[in-house]
Image (cartoon, rainbow, N blue to C red):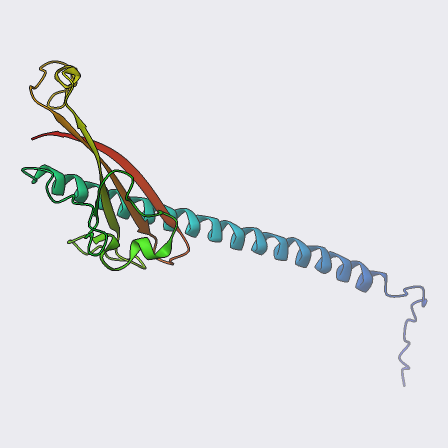
Amino acid sequence: MKTLQYLHTPHTQKGAVLITSLIILLVLTIITVSGMQSTIMQEKMTSAVRDSNIALESAESALREGEEFLEGLVNSSGFTGDTTSPNGLYVTGGAPDIYNAATWAGTNSVEVSDKIPDVMEQPRFFIEFLGTIDDGSADSINITTYGSGVGAGNVSGFRIVARGTGKSGTSQRILTSFYGKRF
């Protein structure tokens, strides 16, 4: 009968391969976690920029609606200085603080008529009448065209202030536009 001989290997291995592979796995895990954190941070930054752009676009739409409102006026008699019901129309120096939340609620400002989707609050605006230039220098102000053609008559100046928010509500933009009109 044959006897089986077993080859005995010397017991020189002490687990070096196991320790080396665990170290490599640890390094790969650290690199992966670091990459995930970087990706999450970039996603948050992208979301904030998008939210800010939505707020800017909604504020711009409120400015345009304020300009359209002024374009439809035939005189400035709506700017009476009555603070009990301003409806977003103020006289010189009577405009509210743009950083006060109450300015952007109720009758202190006007909500845009065309609803904008994906915003926390609908954009709003108010208009301040700045006065009329009537000392003869108004004839040198070009209101109707971009290079030539000077209109005749007094120029009434207005300041339109608009506020828009983004989708999350954490981003807001406040824009100011100056508008001149001959009545």
